[in-house]
Length: 314
Image 1 (cartoon, rainbow, N blue to C red):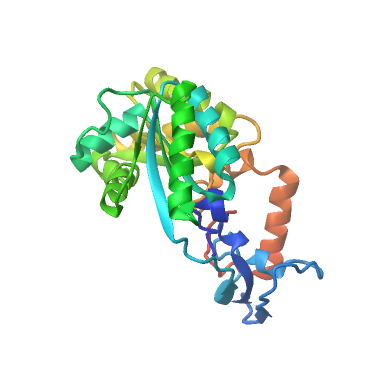
Image 2: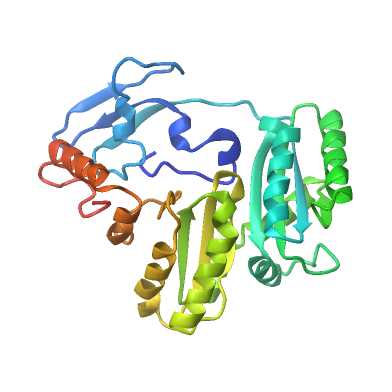
């Protein structure tokens, strides 16, 4: 809760703050603040729990919480699609949202560079006969498995016939679904293989993602003599991940400059992994001076001696 964690299903369930109904927290002076509500609607004054959620432990420590839970769906359907362009990728997301609504629980995008490297690392047989520019791994929660599976397959057939996608695979077993997810979840292992390397977690308008990724890669090659960048992310909620091999670890600050200064207006330097200490110099690109001043004021008031998670965020 302190990090407002996200994940692959944010498109369906939201970030952690959408799932916390109430909590109990302890302030720097030992005061216990209890707001353990279990109701969904509550506009009675300030939303105190937000002083704890996503603030990385800098304003207080969460000790208890009440959570909003959802029933486990009877079955989940996993599908992998291959696409010819970024425009077709975003078009497919809109198409799926119209057809599937809230049953669409994940929509993960992978650029070709990441996809090919993940296949090699995981030793997975190529799922399609040829390479494609982009891939989307989607998950649909099926309330009525037989009816919903038929609906999803019909949706894919329409997407194929219209040229929105070049090819598609539907998992017909849990083992097949896990195999497809292994491609997307190879990120941690990939980062280890690339070492020394840097990983960035940013949020930006979906329409600008591919242009941004191209800009960063071109600047990386031109200014740092680098090679390529591995790109993937939670397209459904605008979260992009970049993994970049470096010649030496000391090159990381120069890469940070390229990654963060290339962000378009309305973006965030941290989509889901927080600020901590590494992103402190760049927080001003995301937060305005009045916002930064208010954050410092809250910190000073609630933790005047600076004892909670010292040196983080601001």
